[in-house]
Every structure is written in C-alpha cells, then in structure tokens.
Image (tube, rainbow, N blue to C red; front, side, top):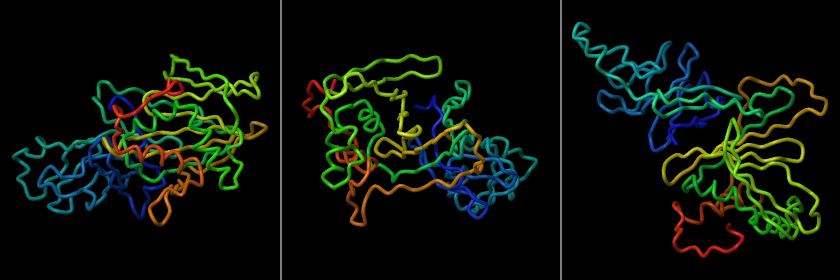
Amino acid sequence: MRRYWHVVAAASEITEEKPKKKVRVLGEDLVLYRDRSGKYGLIAEHCAHRGASLYYGFVEEDGIRCAYHGWKYDACGKCLEQPFENPEAGFKDKISQPAYPVKKLAGFLFAYLGPPEKKPLLPKWDMLTRRDGVRKLEIYQTLRCNWLQTMENSVDPVHTYYLHAHTLRMRGNNQGAYYYRPLSKLDFELVVHPAWAGIQKQRVFADDASHIEAPHPLIFPNMLMVPATNGYNMHFRTPVDDENTQIFHVRFNPTRDGSIVEVPEDPCAEFVSTKNEAGEFHMENFPSQDQMAWETQGQVANRPDEHLGESDR
C-alpha cells in the first residue's frame, strides 16, 4: 500500500486561518500543513527532540517549528534550526523527521508514504483533470473497519438489490429502481490496462438482456470508478490503519456541449454524514447503506465464519 499515492485531505481543509491538520495514514500519526510560502508538508506528528506534537507548532515561511523548544523542520523532514544548541556542533544536520511528499490535484491532497526510489507518477485520472464540467468533492464519515472490506464489496454485484434498491423502496424512495430487477447472469473480467489494473463486474438483468452496463471498474488496490446518470464518480479508500478507513469521493458532471467551466482551485469539500444523532446508520442513501454493511462485519471481518454461495464468486 505504500507504493501508491493516497488522498489524505481536501485542500480546502488547509486554510490561512488553520494551516495544519492531524491525519493518520497507514498507521502513522502525521501533521499535514502548508507553510507560508504555499508549500505543503506531511510530517511525523511527534518531534524528534522530545516527542511533543508538531500540530501545535508554528507554521513559518519554510517549514514548521515545534512549540516546545523551537526545533524547525522543512517539508522534507530536514532539521533547519535548533535554537538552544551550539550551531558549530552540527547537531541539527544529524536530525531528520519522517516526512512524505504531497501533491495537489483537483482539490485533493495526495501523499506518497513509500520508498522514494519506488515513487510512481501521481495518476491523473480523467475526471480529476477535465475542465468541461463541474467537480464535487466529498469526505465520508470515518469508517470503523479495514479498508479491504470496502473493496471486497465493490465487486459484489448482488448486494445492490436489497442493500440499496429494496432499502430505499421500503422508505418510499424509488432512487434505486435500476437495481430492483431480477438478474440472469453475473460476469467478471480481470482488466490489465496500460494505466491501471483491476476487476470489472457486469450484471445482466433478466428484463433487458440486451442492455450492457457502463464500465464499473474496481481499480487496484483501493479505488472504484462508478458511472452515473449524468457523469462519473470515483472513490478513494485511504487506509487510516488496520481498523479504520477514510473515504474521499469525487463526482464529475460534464457539460452537455463540452464547454469549459471555470471552477475554484480548491473547491470546498462536503462532509457526508452516514449516521444519525444516535450514532446509528440512517440508511437514507447509498453511502450510509454501504458503510453499514462494511462496518457491522467487524473492524476486521471474520472470514472463516462466512458461508459463501454461488453469488459470491
């Protein structure tokens, strides 16, 4: 998982008034910040000096300074200053703070936490770079389970009948009518594409066998691309740690005539709540329904106790 770029925040979350945010990614406690020159940094939260949190530090022109004793680090983790140490001793040159590169794309901040020599290019998915439409960014309520449970569900083509369509219909909402039809065939295709690899699922509905679904690929290891009525959706499932997941979602709706749309550089991300005030899943939309299924399996699903059938292929 460290060989991929992961979404760690929306750029709109880092502002002039609040240029720092605590994040936890791949089991590491980190501080995401933007220095006064506009450069983003992602650095280990606990200062290499005495372990105080850099989240409470001072963001300066070229880095972040610890609020405890003033040690300062740049975005690469290099120690720039140690105010109360003898500069001639060269002690600061021996100190480095774990830090990771950050890039901004389509209003999201992506980070790479792997070996520098293995760093791939940041994938520029079409819906993140196209200008002929409007993008909407969403951040889902933190999911209290392993990231793999969200991905396994992405190639489960039959859950949509009850979890989505039937649940909505029982609430008087016909939004899921597309999935409320009998199935005659399920198929899966392993796709190896020059830009990505994954699994593409396909449902054949009994009432319209001639209809072919639009591509709906699960992209390894933690992305899902979803066709919508008037656009496309893409999910990024970032592992917080082994038992928690943060989902970032982008919707792209193209203009009918292909005209270019002027959009803000850092569109404000909307927070999507999947639970009610009582802490229960409200089940009123797809995100809440999906998160219920993922989270209630347990933080790490008990696979040996499952009883798999033909539809689980």
